[in-house]
Image 1 (cartoon, rainbow, N blue to C red):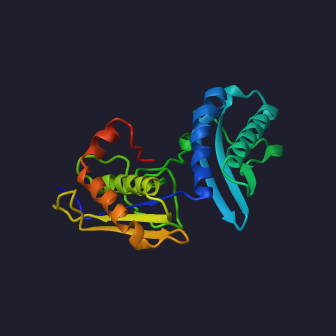
Image 2 (cartoon, helix red, strand yellow):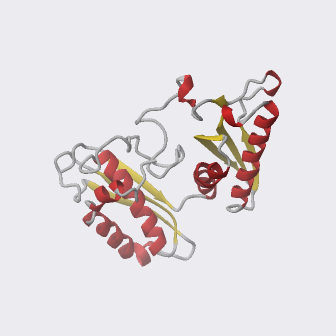
Image 3 (tube, rainbow, N blue to C red):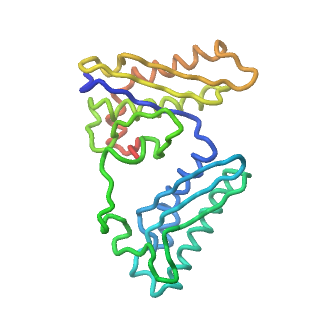
Length: 246
């Protein structure tokens, strides 16, 4: 039974800018960090698109023991910028402008240099209710739930389960059903109601040119129904690490 009256929201497919932001953070913390230990795990990426220009602002914590002086620090920042540029080019033909550690004042040697590789040592730490949604992004121009998905149990905590499930369903629908340009899945719970029987299950579909909603509606409904029927699998998938909450 649902432990609360709450809602979860998921959308798909990701826009070009969303894909770039997500891939940039994950690959900096993955393949790049594996070969460049000076980069700490505290990586933040903000993406903004205006017309045909995508602007990426990257905050990348640099670990002090791997850089001997300001020149080496600058080289590390330049390396991050070059890597991000390569990642962005894989996803877009638009112009991309990249800015790394923009609060640095190089002439004063006031830079983003850390001991731990995180901003937590300066007291700048987040909490479970702040930050990324279940799809790894903060998307103010999208519909989204402000429920915290991390730090909650994956058995009946609906703020966690429905955000994960709606996101998973949205991606499965656009993967399996042709002709969808944009999709939003919203699931609303009612406290005490079975989690596989939401108070509302809503799909907002924007079709591609030449595709009528009635042509794909049954397929969309079938995938949403199947996802809800198998909602208890979310618990095990979270435990196994298959589903991420940030």
